[in-house]
Length: 431
Image (cartoon, rainbow, N blue to C red; front, side):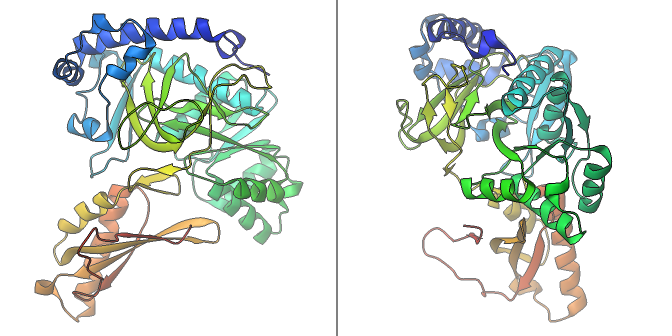
């Protein structure tokens, strides 16, 4: 089933005409309303009126996560605050999050984009969909919730955690589709078996998984465990949230909603635009966002674009599963974690030094995060009570900043290996 045949099956020439019209309006609006873009365009010698073709997009400067951080919280907004009806946020490189705003029109576009995406995956009005993402500043749960409702499905807003109760809800409510991270899907299956519940006996037929990288072998494991069809989807809070792209029944890449998102692939080192089929960094321009539009936003995600018409009938460009990232961001249980966030916490806690190491592992099917921290020489003590207080404070601060729990292990001064080059801050044992 296709949610919006006109938009999803549009001829390329017609789509490009629509994209150009929206791009021209966008460039003019952000130049007038967002000081960052006005200064950025002026510095590059760009007059909004000079954007006369889609190729001119390459002349526009990139936008980065650092730019968003520097304009925290609302300086990147292009709409009056009186017109902003929703504010979400995602993890930033420091303790400050990346803030995104939505007008009523933005929420309508978001809902429609997600309805399109979940319909691609196979959701129908007959489905009861259990959403196991956290409801809060994170965009995932709310975006999927309203899009699923728009598609006609019954939504079970189970949120995160309390895994045994999640299994009970599946049994009692007759859940037919599951929304969560792929790693949590495996954990749910594991807990179900421990409870004496065979996942194959549950009525779930479809899974919509995202918010973290996962492999084809992981997809096979999920499908074997649950007896379902597992689909992938892609979104970023900086763009809109979930709904940017998703798989159809053919599962030959994720269809990008190109009427809303103009996508490029660039060489991450030179910034040069690469042709279809080349591996590079994804760059997105939001064509229909009112409150928080971004132009040429560098995602740091590495992927490949495929322009050929899909067997499903859709003509939109497809993106391959994200192959990796160009920065040091970690995705742990669907949450973005930057080493710099951890460093900020350590500097603010007396008794801790800025020498640390992050160990990411997988316990069962769930990610675990451990931070080894050297106690500062000036505050080193062999008194258990004093060390326990430092450890507890660090764990509390890290949970507050990262939105996930991290185990802290204190080690003696000068215990962690030093490097004359770039310090090896992260050991990721999941790979």
